[in-house]
Amino acid sequence: MLVSNMCPISQEPIEKEIPGTADVVEIICPTCGRFRITGSAIIGLKVHRLEVRAEILERAKEAAREGEIPQINSGHL
Ligand SMILES: [Zn+2]
Image 1 (tube, rainbow, N blue to C red):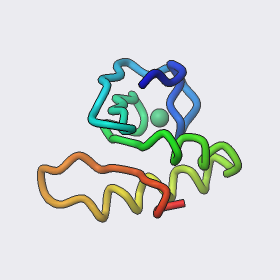
Image 2 (spheres, rainbow, N blue to C red):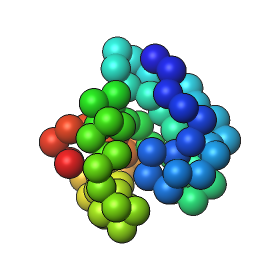
Image 3 (cartoon, rainbow, N blue to C red):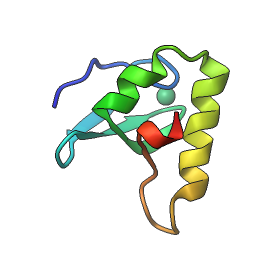
Image 4 (cartoon, rainbow, N blue to C red):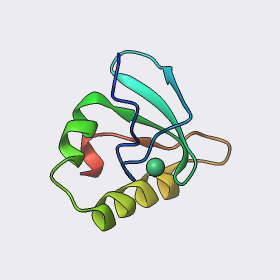
């Protein structure tokens, strides 16, 4: 799946984007770090302010287990 070359959280250009499984993409952002996000979550994030988007990412990071890449899905929105 292709998404724009902007981070869905901080709206800055991202370094790398690796297609993941199914509807998930992996993003490596200089500010937000490495995380995965579903296509529906990318769309859902658009209605939120930057502060809220950053909180959603923080929650996904807290929910990730040790060594696991955080993933944002619709349930976090
Ligand atoms: Zn970012």
